[in-house]
Length: 263
Ligand code: C2E
Ligand code: CA
Ligand code: CA
Image (cartoon, rainbow, N blue to C red; front, side):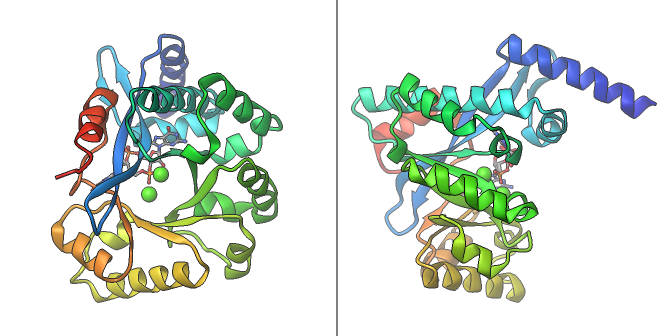
C-alpha cells in the first residue's frame, strides 16, 4: 500500500512538473577520441524539483514510461534540445550531432513521424543534425515493428543509434535489417576496462561487429584515460563519459563549444 501510495504521489508530482516546466535538459559531450574534439552531445533530462532539488532520470523515467507520461516528457525534451541546436547554429557555433533518447512508447504512437516532422519545422532543426538513441532491449521486444518505424525515421534523414548495446539479446539477422548508423557500447562493459579480460573481449568484439556491419561505434561511461586509450586503440572512434565531461546545462555546454576542444 505504501509503495502504491508513493507511486501515486510521484505520478501526480510528475504531471505537475510538466505543467510547471520543472524539467531541464543537460548536455553531455560526445568526443572524437583521437583528436579530443566535440562531435556532438547527448541530451539528458533532469528534474529540478522545488524541494527535492535535481532528481536523476533513473528515479523517474521508469515511472514516466509505465504511466505513459514519457510521451509528453520526451516531446518536451526534444523540443527544448532542438530549439537549442538551432540557437547554437545561429550563433555560428558547430555543435555537431544532437543525440536524443527515444522511449519505445514514442515509437508506438501512430503520429510520431508527423509530430517529429512538425517539431523539426517548428524549431528549424535539420534532420542531419539529429540522432535518436533507442535501446537494444526496446528494439528487440518487437523487432519487426521497430524495423518498420525506424526505417521511416531514417528516411527523414535522421541518424539512429542502438543504445546500451550488448545488454539485450540482439539477433544478428535483425541487426543487419535495422536502418541503424551506430552502436553504443554500454557502460557496464566499459567500467572495468582495460583490466577485465571478459569486458575487454566483449568490447573488442562489439567494435569488430560494428566495423563489419559498416556502423559507427561509441562507448559511454568512459571515466579514465586508460579506458579512453584502450577504446581508441581498438578502433572505437567516439567516446562519451565523465573523463571528458559530465552532462551539463546548456550555458555551460556553450562554453565548451566555444573552445572547440574539450581539453
Ligand atoms: P543512457 O541513455 O544510457 O544515458 C547514459 C547515462 O550515463 C546518463 O545517466 C549519464 O549521465 C551517465 N553517464 C555518462 N557518462 C558517465 C560516466 O562516465 N560514468 C557514469 N557512471 N555515468 C555516466 P542519466 O543522465 O542519469 O540517465 C539515465 C538514463 O535515463 C539514460 O541512460 C536514459 O536511458 C534515460 N534518460 C535520460 N534522459 C532521457 C530522456 O530525455 N528521455 C528518455 N526517454 N530517457 C532518458
Ligand atoms: Ca542514451
Ligand atoms: Ca546506456
